[in-house]
Length: 285
Image (tube, rainbow, N blue to C red; front, side):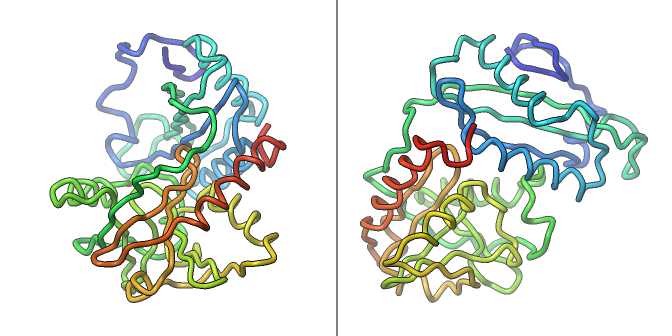
């Protein structure tokens, strides 16, 4: 079952048509959320990011779009799919109401909530790690719009096809200044000595929810210094360790970039701290 504007419908329902603005113009946003035993991980951060993104896109936020309302609708959808005691991937999509050409007839929005079960309730380290390569065919534009979880993800799609065709697990995206911005499906962190570095939002990377959690965790670690600064491709092979992050997988180590092989010690340490952070409450509800 899916949740369309508060109405629970079978997955096979035809509830969207050719007038949908997310399909026509990419005029939409989405949040990918991890839920375990009906507890939403980092819900406040997801909600605040969604509200801020809607304002940036000049969407009219409904009066009932409160944290409590959307949390309840997510819970209701999970319950309807008998996933209350499971680990669940939730996709909350918000898009402008149909009508108009580039100029919308309405600033109001509609939403869809989808669910899918996950295998593990805890974040686990993928032992194999990922082999990565730079995606150079197209670049991410640095600036505010690139930090949003919008429906405009064609570069990610093309990079995924490139990775599949060339035998890589993931690709790293560049901006117009040829700095490394992020991976296809998450933010990226580099470890060199006692410094952990990640690209700044001003370079165009997604304003990741887990990125923010890890920045908070790392800032409390006495043995490491966090640096938010532009990353040159030349830094990749000089790093001791690379890893990518998103709220569904947690931390995924990079095992290889070209001829360079990477360690996983910091990834393991951070993953343990992340799981503890979640169990103790963190910023989730």
